[in-house]
Length: 382
Image 1 (cartoon, rainbow, N blue to C red):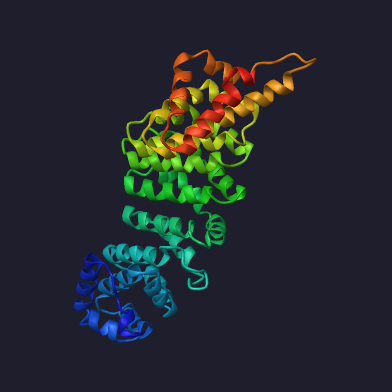
Image 2: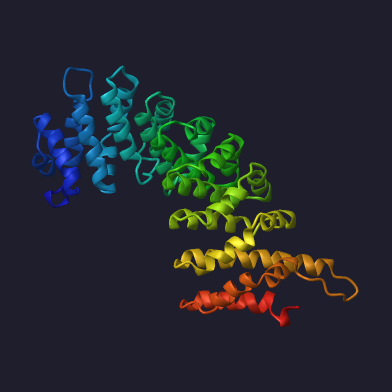
């Protein structure tokens, strides 16, 4: 590696690295002057069983991985993982184990190519998930979550499921540490974002009942991530949507659409909207019975274009389903009213909110609101 390609971390991360290297009798300058792989070999030497300061060596490797994907991959190409994974198997101090868990997460950050990860990496992380220490569990869950959202997410998620890690999710989602809960939620969210089979793994492990409870968590970050997890489940099949309904997720989800925190409100709206395209007529009716139309209409005045667009899409999908039901129930030329359109027309405040949405400064949103009004709520649509 050329000097021009040297370590370029943020000031805070660089300071940590310099401190760790100094304790090892090394310097960042020597790292930048030497080839990356050669320098990593020096650090690897400190991971061997000895009286030498393993913790600082592990921390230094973590800071190198955290600098950039380029440095992370240089270190992975230097085969730093086998000795690091071997260290995790040994009886080391908890402080060293915590730093090693953090370093392992940093090597997984950004979802590196499976070619660069040792085949024992995921089994090692799975063992860390089973540890009793909250910090170790948190880092392990973040590592798995990062692998579950990168370019190679599908293959990583399949292995995560095969290792039985999903079975631990309910326990982790009930953990007393909010840090563990948030990391486990992120992992559940990204697994559920995969294929129908991967989404089903989250449902089958019993996580849905935990998500209902987390909707009432006092921390907004946890409520937001719980909505994101549900959002990915709602984007699944009719049976998966029904599982969410049966778990009691809809009423509290609708309630969160009026939460004071804008991020929670946005994720709750997206979650409910995701259920509307694929739901059966009975499922759509259930959403409406639990206040979906009113909740979507209330969001049309929010100063957040993502929320407004989501609300309009949710309303359009519901009204489209109602129109399809009306058309299928009509016989002998007799007109059958769209029940969901009629619900809006009978509520002056709902009509007013849709009318005001047609004055939105964003032309796309104005046109979408106008199209809904013309297609489903005007005299011409009868």
